[in-house]
Structure formats: structure tokens, C-alpha cells
Length: 238
Image (cartoon, rainbow, N blue to C red; front, side, top):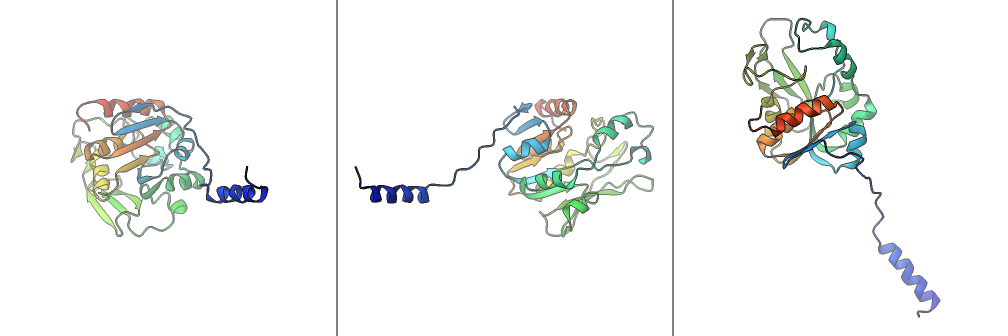
């Protein structure tokens, strides 16, 4: 055998050269749905995101914490205000820190509601809903770091007056048109992997599938996961 001093020197050199041991984080959830382009997890994003690699783009629409009785939608049967009050809670800063760190670049709709968590934004994205003169919002804003300056997408979305998905009934009370999410993806052409931690009924996944991107969706509601899975598994996407 080797002399004691030489053996000890070689052991020390081995320890120096060895790569640091990385902790293994095991995914505690099986996918709710998966195809060649999109995977859905029915879970709390705070538990799932630490188990996933970093994505190219975060594209999401978190709950805004709205006061539903004052939105002007009282007569719309789609909205169950009691149910909305249960899920539509503004994420806290610690949650948004985890979400923000999940990708290299980000588009976070409702950025005006989350400004206290996200900070200043040089290049917000604006969706002009072209609603006309009424009590509904003229548009929505996203916190973004993909464009470098403000960008505006004009796409009518006001009751029966819509530029897309005419005749299609929304499944989620705050469901965005697929066209809006496809526009976001068009501004990040080099982003191949997408994550949406507040996936709702899977609009981000539909857009990614149509644009040839890979996406992971996370949604805490099983009912919405089921709706998303049905949308993604059908032949005609909307």
C-alpha cells in the first residue's frame, strides 16, 4: 500500500477535485395530464416549482384579489362570487418570489396589482380590450422583462364583441383569449420552455401547443385541471 502521508495527500486531492454534492429534490406529485408539449400538475405551485428546472419564460395570470361584487358582472351566470372569493386571493410576496425565480424571463399579468411584490417595470405589456364606452376596464397590464419597452396588443374582448373565440363559452371567470398568450409568446421567440404556476383552465398551454413550445402548467384546482386537460387533448384548440 501507499505510505500514510502519500495516501492522505491523495485523499485530500480527491476531496478537492470532487464536484459538490447537490441536494436531490424529489417531485412529490405525478402529472395530472401530459402530452408531447404540455404537462399539468394539480398542486400548489410553491411545492412543485422547487422540484423543476429553471424555465426560459414565466407566462402566467395570477389571482388579482378583486372585489367581485363590484366588477359589474353580477348578472353573468358564469361567475360564482362565493367560489371566486375562495380562489381569487392576491399571492403574497414569498409566493411571488418563488414564482419569479422559476424562469429566466417573465410575463406576469395583473402586474399593476402585484407592483408591491415585483417592483418597477421598464417594459410592461398592455392588452387593449377595445371595450368602448362602458364600465368595464379598457384593458389589462402585465409586468414583463421580455420587450424592454411598453408593447400594446389590441384585441377586442367585450361580451359578444370579440376578435376571437366567438361562440365559445369561457370556462374560467377570468379566462384570457388564447390570442393574448400567443402574442406574448411572439415577443419571446427564443423561449422554448414555458411555465405557468397559476394555470387556470390551461390557456397558456393551448398557446404553447399552437406555437410549438413546451410548457408546464400548475393549477391547485382539480376542476380547472380537468378543464385544461380536456382543452389540450382535443383536436381543435381554442
